[in-house]
Amino acid sequence: MVKHKQEPDVLSSSPAELEALMAPWGVPAYRARQLFEGLWRRPIRDYGDLTVWPKALRLSVEDKYPLHRVAASRVQTGQDGTLKLLVKLFDGQQVETVVLPHDYGYSVCVSSQVGCNMGCTFCASGLLKRSRNLTAGEILDQVRLANDLIQERGHVISRVDLMGIGEPMDNYENVVKFMRLAHEPLGLNLSYRHFTLSTSGLVPEIYQLAEEGIPVTLAVSLHAATDDLRSSLMPIDKAYPIAALIAACRVYGEKTGRRVSFEYALLAGVNDTDDQAMQLVRLLSGFSCHVNLIPWNPVPEHPFTPSSKNRVEQFQRIVQEHGISCTIRKELGQEIDAACGQLRRREEEALSP
Ligand code: SAH
Ligand code: SF4
Image 1 (tube, rainbow, N blue to C red):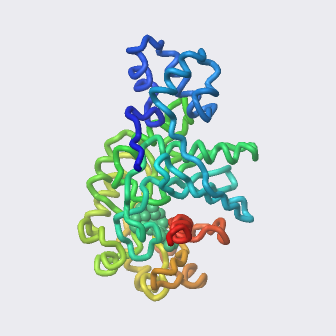
Image 2 (image 1 turned 180 degrees about the horizontal axis):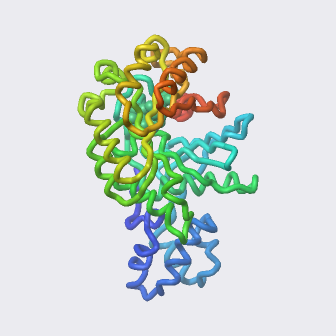
């Protein structure tokens, strides 16, 4: 039987919402703030750990609003310190969370949906259709889980990428709420500048995000500079062609003051020629943006081959020579980091009869 999540959802509530929730039972506002701090800053597993609260209050809240923390059902550790987690949600469904070490500290890549409906032809996440959106609390709790794991190494998460399973703009309200909650000074207190939201290009939501007053970095999965090719790789291109997408990105950059990034996964013989690099240059000329070339991670179900290292470097050279900032994404956790979405898929295949 599918369990239904109790409303309201404590993990998705701001300090003000927790205050409003508890006020009718005569709980003072400072107790609600203690709960929010306990949930995120000094993470409690359950209300029982919230020892600043009187026991009677803990028991009565626990009864009304059980916490549905996410939990790691599997942890793979790479030689470079990358952690890839299979994460179980309250209803037994699973997503992936990846913790990545960098020179500056640690970042976490979180999932926003169970599966994805966008149907990109090179991606493992889209092989499993979206079965539901994650709540704001479930996305935030992946950051908390990552923090729990790296705490032993004396670190905390300082950057968050919405680049795991799912299309964040297809779960807009919960994703925006997640970023607001993660920004709360009483909680994780993360700066908006330390978030990157990756989207396949849902144009209306890009305009909407530009107005939210949360200046996060927008990363747009481009992967091709012409609609003919892009629409064959990414069905979303038929609804929102490249010209409309770039126009929205320009507005996003102007409104937020953040430089937009374009992601471009190189597929041998598909989108990686010198001509295609020049098409990309023409498309982006005069736009202060950044291009991130991604070595494609093979997905056995998809008929592509990653471009060679030489090809990737030549592509980068052409883009850079024309004055566009362009980097090649470092491949972390190579031996464990099968393309995002694959760990969960493998697990589900192993479980199916
Ligand atoms: N749905 C969002 C965010 C999740 S995908 C989006 O599409 O942007 C995160 C990034 O990984 C995207 O740029 C996506 O195009 C890329 N990606 C998907 N499958 C990949 C693969 N097999 N190898 C390399 N990058 C991949
Ligand atoms: Fe979904 Fe992004 Fe994968 Fe496309 S690339 S199927 S939008 S997760």
